[in-house]
Length: 421
Ligand code: HAM
Image (cartoon, rainbow, N blue to C red; front, side):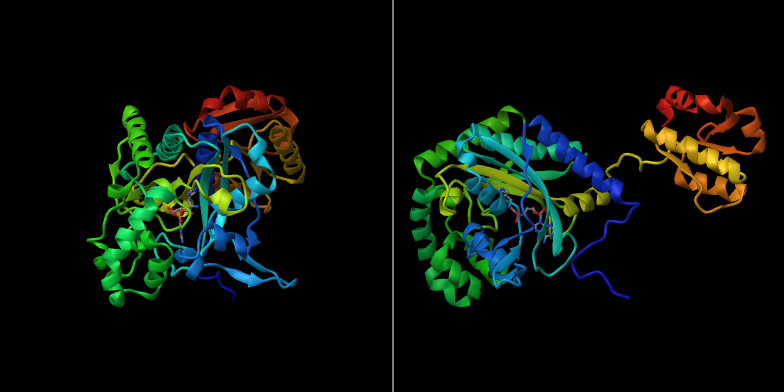
């Protein structure tokens, strides 16, 4: 017996309707926000993530699934969606498209993390990335899209927390202040923070080590160091959110786990799924395209973890739509009747109706039992008499009532009763 790798999950056939529900909601939201789907490879050159996601992030430092392929190239399974979409944007010259370029994706991601509730090694993200607009209105629209997605899923009780981590200009001043603060305390901090101190001091605030977290408590706040433009931008984003009655709080400790962010960052956080409560996170990344060799265009996006959303929905008893089940089960008593059942089912399927038959040569009693288990809305069994009369009795499984229907009229009958499907 070979088991599933640690930190990965099967989606069982009986559970997949929940996934479809979440993915359909994502696609519906993408549609009304005019976001077009983009698909990029599951693996990319490792260099993309080193430069894109950043060398001071935990993702790049500790969590990447990196290997050498047979041609001796270093490739990495995507740990997140943004870097690949940014590469696609640059490589395909999308900078010459009408702006903004609005994309979405649903993708598996891979991070070699210690698995725990809500934290997997293979997980899935629904993300959106919008390129080309520096307007705070775009920040608000991206946040609204995330919020609309959570609403569509029936998720309540998630808190939207926002922050601004500034641009290159304000980050310079801030980095000086942070360095002054941490310099005398570095000895008691983890190795990763020592590297962050040199390369990207802001990221120290995102360290999960207890000692570092404690030391960071009194650190200067980025919001006190924003330059005029970043301050105005952040205020404007907040005005847009307030105007649409989107509830949020400003949390100056949100710096996000990846290196590419600038200005607005945000997270939707739940307290109903344990320590890994961030169901959705995102922000601006105005320098990434340029850093990856593309045009200096601003961008913003978010990604939501589908497994975490599913967990949250289950934990908080959010109602899923009913699991799809057959509209009709058509049984057969003998060889000839079974053939007729097969023929009718094929006809109904061609008309878009989910019809089921017996594949196991069960007795009539066992067929009826099975039909009930499938959740079929209507059930009928064809036998010799039905073939002679060209008529079957169809049982409505909700009311228990029977209706005699000519074989040739089964489709019309089911359509008439569509409200019961
Ligand atoms: P992230 O915060 O690293 O951001 O991941 C986004 C979401 O993916 C998280 O909020 C969480 O729901 C889910 N997630 C992350 N790691 C795991 C894991 N190990 N197991 C289960 N779920 C996980 C990004 O990935 C950015 N690319 C988001 C973004 C898009 N920023 C701008 N555009």
